Image 1 (cartoon, rainbow, N blue to C red):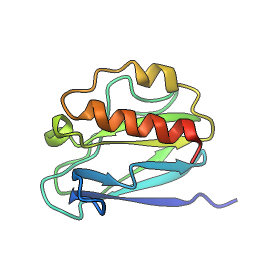
Image 2: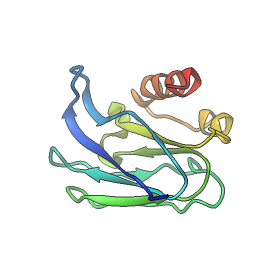
Image 3: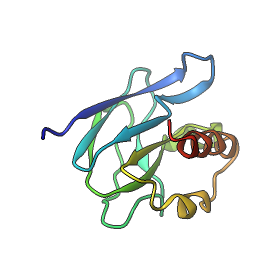
Image 4: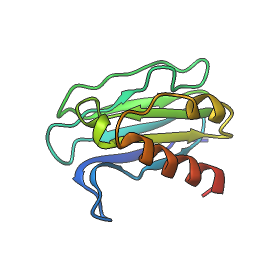
Length: 129
């Protein structure tokens, strides 16, 4: 089987009008797939959130305005953020296989508007969409 690459856009404004977003908000992937974060709009990056990864996954931190490709080797939820805009709610998630560490990532501290975004992400994961 071939690993798939999933594109995630880093945007100042999402298709639904939300400011500072990753699109799609939640990516469903398989172990070994890659996620490519594309700086569609300037001044964004993608960085894994502290304690927001399944066991065995490596943290990443992309540079502002630079595309970064991350391999997701382990099953679980990978929470990530745009470092400059996390307080504005710019976070996202990759779900690889089963969301085995969902309760753990729900317990992370989400600053400012990221709390609301996290609620949307968890609702989407729990709906299994």
